Every structure is written in structure tokens, then in C-alpha cells.
Image (cartoon, rainbow, N blue to C red):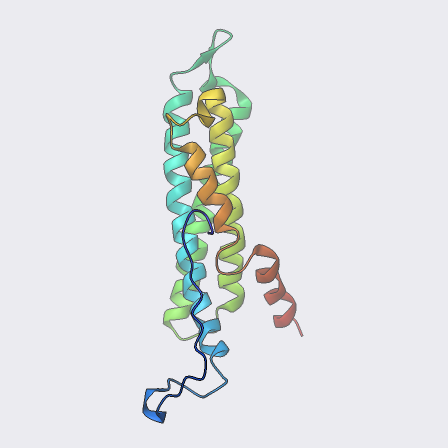
Length: 176
């Protein structure tokens, strides 16, 4: 369903469990799942870094050998900016993930930091994949390269574990 993966809904009608089989408090299952979102959002940040790094490596290799109108793409300023911006964002994102993970390990409330990671990382991945596709031209959207699949993954990452708009609401809650 989402991004080519299947999800399933389980329905339990009139199910009864002994008290020993219940985890946590009845009716309070949402709070523990909210804590799990922190971990998943950091994982998505790491996933986005890996996807972005691979995409940047492909773009760098390509622009060093592809010539247009008598010049290497690597010599074109716009391409240089894309590469520099991409490398900078990947570095910043890696630091954000490490910082938030360290806070989580220390037992800190990292909801806001995890939300920042999720938003920044997924937007970054989409942007870097898009620049790579542009640098490859028509070849960037063929099935001969994985860029079309990477673009799909980057787009779906913006939905996983709460869309960017939901993550943004954590900033408002923490400012009260």
C-alpha cells in the first residue's frame, strides 16, 4: 500500500485477555507508541542520510565524466552548488541524528529533536535525489539507474512516522 509495501489491519471482535497478557494500562496504548516514534524518526534520518550519500556519490561520478556543450558538468557552477549544498546538508543531518540519538540514550525528551531530524532529513533526501536526476538528464528517470526508485523512497519517507506537517506540531507544543 504505502510505497509498494503492504500493511494490514487486524480486527478483534469481543476478544478477552487475562490481566497477565495485557501490556501497560488498558486504554493507554498511544503514549508508549509516541515514544517509539522518536526512535523511528531517528532511523528515518539515518536512512535518508544513506540514500542521500549514495545519490550524491552517483551524481559526483557522473558530472566528472559527462560533457555538455564542450564542458564537463562538474565545471558548471550550478552543479557545483548542488554538490556543495548536498554535502553540507548530509553532514548537518548526520550531526542532528547523532545529537538526538545521544539525547535519547541519556533519557532526555527528544520529541522536538526527532521531529526536526525527520523533517530535515526527508526534505534533504528528496532535494538531493532531485538534483541527481537533473544532473543525469533523461537518463536520470530511466529504469537503467536506481534514481527513480530512490525518488520514490525519498518521497514516501516524508509520510512515514508522521508527515512533516504533524512533526511540525511538536514545535508548537514545546513552546507553551
